[in-house]
Image (cartoon, rainbow, N blue to C red; front, side, top):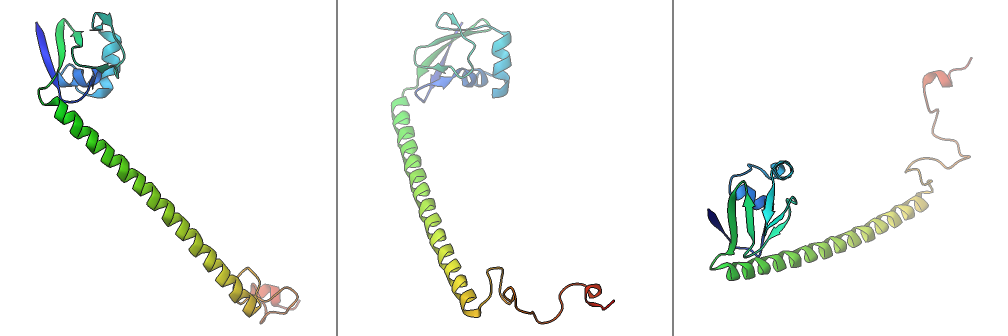
Length: 153
């Protein structure tokens, strides 16, 4: 008995067909199903789960014949899907561009901040390690470290 499968896209994959017809319950099972059971596509054995099935393809699975056919309004749906795909691609390009601009602004802000801190260090005559540290060769404001280091012996 031949069963007609109407599709609303340009193609469907073999896995989608198997799931739609409840031959398998998940896409992960397709690989193992196709290893164990023969599937014929247009008279030839097929074991690729991602194989694209187009209009007028004939698939035989477990003695059942499936004929792939485009739905009546498929042309409009395909055009609508293409418009959606184009809109998403444009949005992705815009996001990438915006991210690049943000990264450039962040780099400029970081450079300004570093220059400002370098100027402050120069004015306060501290070394690059931080504010308040004395330069090498100058005595600090008292002993540093544990008390045992400072006790006379």
